[in-house]
Length: 78
Image 1 (spheres, rainbow, N blue to C red):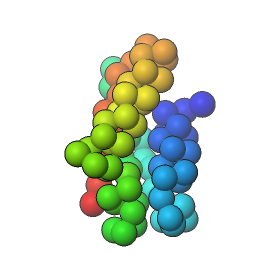
Image 2 (tube, one colour; image 1 turned 135 degrees about the vertical axis):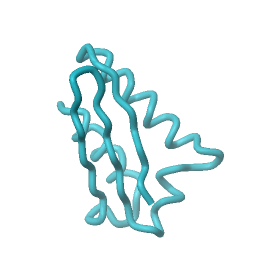
Image 3 (tube, helix red, strand yellow; image 1 turned 90 degrees about the horizontal axis):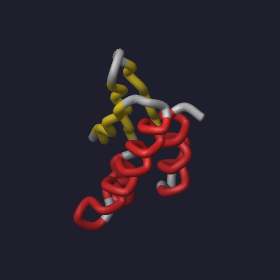
Image 4 (cartoon, helix red, strand yellow; image 1 turned 60 degrees about the horizontal axis):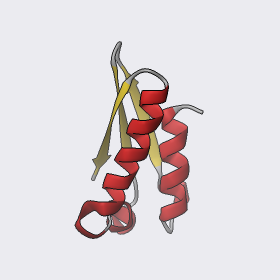
């Protein structure tokens, strides 16, 4: 499973409007940047209280990337 697909699955499960979830992966040699864009109304659900949900998504992404032998960064775009 690609890192992009992992974040897309988690985000779709969290939001009210899964159709508006957009995930883009920019791959470099050593690092991948995963950009997540959701509807304005769902932004709070993806970030969570005090950023806990976003933090948890970053931990999951980091663990999956480590298993693939790379580093990954999650950027949530407003």
